[in-house]
Length: 362
Image 1 (cartoon, one colour):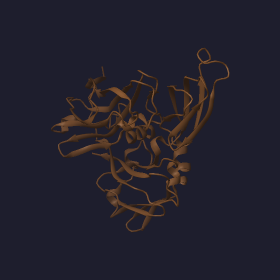
Image 2 (tube, helix red, strand yellow):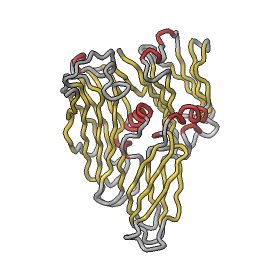
Image 3 (spheres, helix red, strand yellow):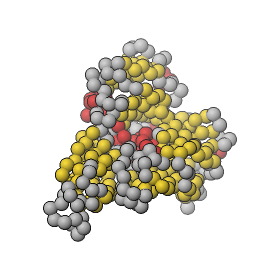
Image 4 (cartoon, one colour):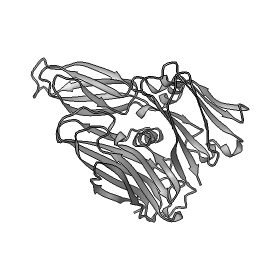
């Protein structure tokens, strides 16, 4: 076989919270790594965050050298912008059922990219370090399970030029009308800049009044747009995100958290064989990535379909032809590169901002 799937971590309950370090005992070039995170609840309960928020950090390291550093939300969003397909999220808030999320990390432009892959033989002790909190999305979790698998080149011999390195380089708190200045690294070509602008009651494009990329003190300005302009220009290149939920609740509102965070809509249905005629949803409201579903009397089981844009509040800024290694942003030719962000007049409630870079590391 040219390729094979490898098990890096067998399914394991990690406990309530902590950090797990796993050796990457693979010698063949790795095209992608997938984390499969699953939690089980004992009783039906409201969600408090998206399921992948349980994974606060994923790092691929070699000693002090950090090759990847992303949260679960950032990794899923980057995978979406990378493949134009949303990673799997299976969400049920019914008692004794599970929530399951797949978090992919791609080292090439596509699966089995012969030019770009992570070659473990070039490192002394490559490891994956995962930080988690099983209750971050639902307080009633009684068990969890983490599995890590990878796709490797097997009998197909390749000599990759390098791999795609992705890192969160900064986290900050947006301030209304305030400026945030970030000097970007100039060590490797940049394939994509991803901005995460979170708020409990705003869409990501509404949090940013200005995003400006300045070379050499404004000698050249490659990007100068508002957050909403970024959404309209770039996010429309990608398809809508669709997610399904299964739930069980009574008259009170049920809170669901999904990946889409812009132009979010929801469709709900009940099982006619279980629910009496006339019992239905009374209201669905959206705030940020939270969908509050209010149910009519005796409506105990339901299915919900959410759809929208901008996974996990992330806005993409791709540079050049994403399939052409030579067309990405060659920052080595720049003396200084600064990202300037201005908060909107209203940045929303409990806003946070993150800056993620995907770079070509030779």
